Image 1 (cartoon, rainbow, N blue to C red):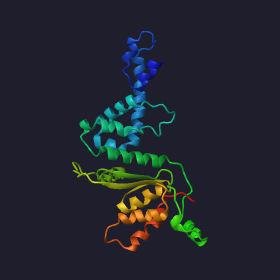
Image 2 (cartoon, rainbow, N blue to C red):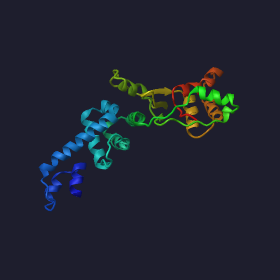
Image 3 (tube, one colour):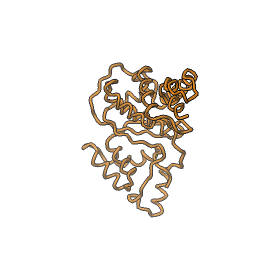
Image 4 (cartoon, rainbow, N blue to C red):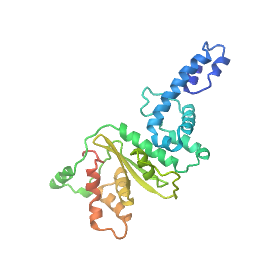
Length: 251
């Protein structure tokens, strides 16, 4: 049975033919192996649709086979299958020659996690107003990110490419990129997965809150990354914008 399991996971069916004690016919087992690979291909193609769009079906199938061999499916539900797919993408850098593909992979993964995230009661700006009326010092308040909210620090500025693929818009062929940091927020709000690029100050503000800092510390972290010509309006908008987007759970 162990030999059978290995074949279904992606091993060569002929291994069973060479194992005379297995009792299985290699051609018979190939059917199960092909069905298994096809099912896992469909799952990974859905979870990493942008990677598939960029590398094409043939190369993606190569990645799928490599992933199945290294990380066979062991959970009853396949919805979350592919957590380590970026490791296989990185391992095949010499083949795909796309240094930014790992970033695309991270974005696809964030989309899947946001899509699968549990529901939660979200914080409203009115909730903070009530706390202030009750005498709470809002500067000392700490907020918790809602399930599925992802802050992603990219090494390459690939957000436009990725978001165009997600939005089914045309992507300019042969796009050349210069290595440069970019910050992206991915989250689910009102049953939709949302995503947008973040300014460095926004990223610092939300990251500080994610790391357990209070609002005062988060604002100070954002101020450090604000452009020199920023005004008070940009700073005061950080909290209501983040709360309005549904990024935090109710206190």
